[in-house]
Length: 586
Ligand code: ZN
Image 1: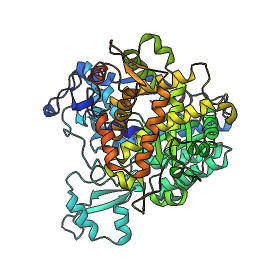
Image 2: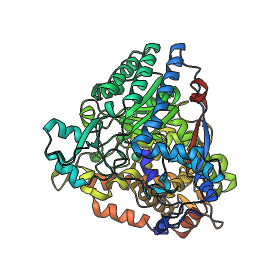
Image 3: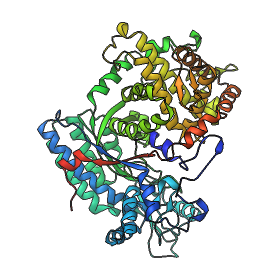
Image 4: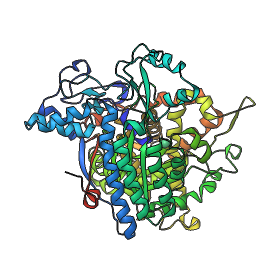
């Protein structure tokens, strides 16, 4: 699952701010006017929401063999843009080819935005069409099912299948087509495995993966690339998913059919995507250093000892990488900043899942969105306190914090979990907990860095604390911008309100925001304690109260958010390093 991208794609309108004050972005038109497609000027504004950003990755640490293997993997991954477009809509390639021939300014503006979305529907605007002559909205079943198929027809048809075929019909790696013989007992529907449906593309990819496998010296990577190449042709991805979990190599690729978000009918069918990444050695070392101290942090949580976990279990592996190239489902609309894979429950139960964090993509988002946001919400004198290093370190701490705190609880003598007790409020509370506890844990590490052997691992510089909290304050606006209708936004509003009440954050008369460094530390500790206790007790009423308070942020926030409409929403990567080592075919 793409966690970070999910947050972003839930965003509805650029001006969607607190208290449901939803304003359409300038020039975006309104939902009801879907039939009217944008003109060239409007399309330019829509495209400008994605700031072009060069992604460069240092290859100097790679062996000669790995460098050549990397080029093969980029070449393989390039096939997935076209393959994904096929999966998204049957008319996608023909429409795109027609636009390419249109040399008018309008045609060119359409073409540019088409490539960003990999189709004729604008992902930031509820998947509404922005070119004429196409379905007005993205088709819920994409090109995984016949366009005229109903849910009922599918379900009725599945009943007639053998157990094995039923599994495939509801599986990740088949499409359903009309077999041309209406009136047969199968109602004219037919299963086609991906390995047949997309044979030509997959054969090309398999060949390139095998070539890459022959070039790399790393055994775990060799094994994954070989089994993934086999999977492309056999349609059985199980072993290659298992091998992917074991990859421990300088090149860390994710390539295959994975996410099912584009199948909005059933959520069964996986779309092809690729992320060709290099492991970030420095951040991986930081993560390993933090991981060694998790039990110590748990033992020092600001809650009564009875609620702490005396023996933490093993946590899911986290990898920090830099993206060299992304394609297909991994490169349209808002860019993925992190993902959890695989999605196959059989693999998860055997091997768990791996979380991959794309550091240079996070850096690009920081530079192109958080820096301009900060210029508007922070005082000028405080801009030097904005730090990507702390921004990213807090994201790492947030991820690790999900594993800390109460997970097995007792309510009225019964064993339970915070998730079961807090139900619909759990995600918002858990996200807020991970943020607050992330700050608390980092403060603990700053305070004890010599004793913990973390000197030189934590971002350095005398203003470490000031940078941590100021960067966090600025980043809250980036989250709030995506609306209060989902867990991260609601969880963030809760934290802001709490820290304002405790004086840790303040609103200045000129409408900028600041950290009160004398009050922020105890405020974060109290917030962490309260959130942990809501989870420890499974206290639904307390969770609700905290969230409700958060939904009433002072008007200064709405005003600040309204002033951010011209700040880009996301980035549009230009893969400089990939284009150097494996240029796109003309
Ligand atoms: Zn989280």
